[in-house]
Image 1 (tube, rainbow, N blue to C red):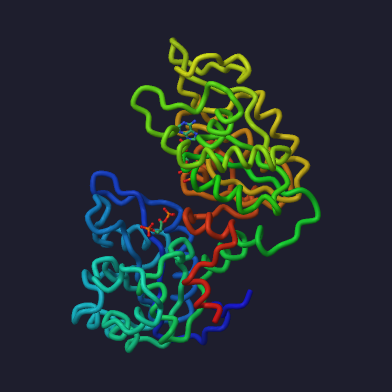
Image 2: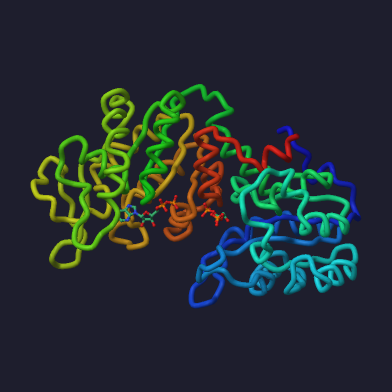
Length: 401
Ligand SMILES: Nc1ncnc2c1ncn2[C@@H]1O[C@H](COP(=O)(O)OP(=O)(O)O)[C@@H](O)[C@H]1O
Ligand SMILES: O=C(OP(=O)(O)O)[C@H](O)COP(=O)(O)O
């Protein structure tokens, strides 16, 4: 690890911290999720070391329904940090500066949504961001900057890339652990086989990962939308949009050539489902061998039990397993067999394992598994994808310089 961490920070300083508390919002209510719990570790440690702790975070994007104030985030975070988290509805104006100046060691204050600042959002070079009024004004108030927002580190926004140029900068605990685990496929040599489980709805993303990682990964086990698109390329009548679905045809157009190339050139590294599950006329789960599918009129919502049995030995024999995307619509218990099957197979082994993607990792707690059974459960989506493919994250790079 080449960046400074909280271990290098002298106690009792004025510290500006960037978190990623971006969360689902339902009917205006911010939903608690593991980002709060994870970042609480960093915030608690800073407060216990007598720092005056000022937090920045974003929520949603301007124009979106989830572009809301961070007032609720302060309350949710306080529950996880187990101490008061003050909130000020301002980013770097007089109200924010007054609130910052009134803090004592051990106090924690959350500023308003950084994306309410015009200078935050356009993606620009760090030098440009460091020269904004937002960064220059806030930096005056602090001794140090801590970035804990690994999951937003692919964005060149002011709060992420501006401050490291003007303040001594450190990685928070979430930044450290996410960086180390998620970069390991690019940075570590594993003695045995490396397996990647690929699924979810964002087929274009995961096919990009497969293309970039064919040298590093010995076996890809496919499910979800990408899995069905590969079966379609192999000549099966699956991977087509049925009724008003919008999951397959556009992603097929965008990826057909890449999929065909991967099958031609790397076919022995790709294992596809042997059976699929769908909802029958009694609303129950039914399974069908892929070889028996003759019409493209059914929505397949999971891989089948035979597929799980085929994938399990690959997982058991692996030195490392990386997961990106669910193998089925696991939120519906009838279609969770594929996702829970592979996660349980990973949990049974002591291989190095990383489970990524906000949606997929939710299956762990939903179905009574423990995060402790995996080496790392990531809270990052887009940043995880980039780390897997070895792409650098601008906000992480700046901490390393
Ligand atoms: N065959 C399928 N049909 C519909 N949805 C699916 C299917 N397979 C997986 N999914 C959905 O994919 C979602 C996860 O997709 P994605 O957002 O790409 O992954 P993550 O955010 O976990 O990386 C899950 O919520 C799951 O319901
Ligand atoms: O939630 C986030 O990304 P993710 O959905 O890829 O995990 C980050 O907060 C980045 O948010 P953005 O994609 O609006 O820049």
